[in-house]
Length: 453
Image (cartoon, rainbow, N blue to C red; front, side, top):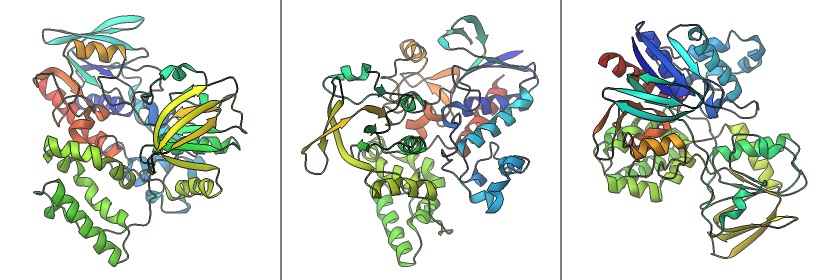
């Protein structure tokens, strides 16, 4: 019996395991899962009902061949019947509920003798001819014929400032996906959130829920915040106009369609949603130069347009901004120092390069997961890179790999028997974190593994 080791038990790792077990009765699957709850991972282990999915429920099935799987499960849960007052397929539901769904999805397999969940951390992987030895902290080493890397998200990197000593302070919180920043919180004092993306929004909602009365400062280099989901219509598909265009030509065509939509009183969101299914194709076809240009000049604008907020969530944040309790400051942090009574933060304004000085009681890093694998200090990542089983993607996003998830070494050779899924493929596919995409990747990797064993 062949053994497949999956490093990471979040959505990607769990779904890959399920697909493998569905395809073969003659394999053993071992999920090595550290810290976070099985299946839920970083994304879905929240217990705050205000933390919503940013994809409508109708698109959240774990299985592409069963598009209503999530909706049908939801209909069996009487405690969530109130969500059916509207058209449920278009609702943005709490991520906590989706976490429960994922446990439902994996639960039939937990008693399967083919599946073993190892609640520990993989710390080293060595290749032994055509197989692997996976060393696990405080557990026996396991031998595996194939390895799937499903690491998920690593904690954000602290801002780069001249004196980083502040980051050792008990008033600095580097992990925004834990609620430690809410404990012993003085609700009358100010707080700084670094980063203006979706993670920031979750943290703002959690602060509001506690009755926080202080000022919420938020900063990022550009100060862009995710836009709101609005009512959309089916805008005509225009991919044939851009499939052979370079980056400049694509931008020109998109601008044309945005103007056309505006003239017809169609939301710009409809245009972006029409383009969205082709994002990976477009990215793969870009030259290295075009990818770098996109990263430098356009990725933040794409983030605003693509990773949108449920309308009610967007309104909640805007109300705080209108009340002047929340303030977004575009700029670059130059220093953070702490004294006995407060934390002093200096920000160079993006607008006029002047220095803005803030006084806060705590600082929370919401800049998003660290994706430059050369900066990740995790023991296993360092080992894999040093042994050339994996290599950092030259775009400093994820690792080198083929578009179907085969891991590549530094010299671009396939690392036999090793696969990657999800955020590890950011530099290869760009869009690789949404449930529909991860579901396809899990299916593809499982199929490749079964074919080769």
